[in-house]
Length: 114
Image (tube, rainbow, N blue to C red):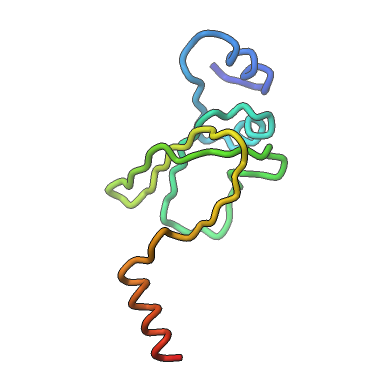
């Protein structure tokens, strides 16, 4: 089914049926995010820098909080994260709980070198 309007999504969400899935339409995703109609999302992070492109979270997206519920890395190094809506927005510290061995060695080296 081709959805042309956010009102179609609102109507379908009220009906019984399978989950609705969108793929590749940033315009529709932007409209769904702006209207708080996204319950879950899977984000594929491809390790390639192209220098430009469309924004996933455009101006006008409604603030939402999502939690990572699963993740995996493909054989081609694509990171796939699945996120589900998580209530109120929480500000969190993005620092890791503990530094890696490599980071500890880097910090020691920086101290030594001044």
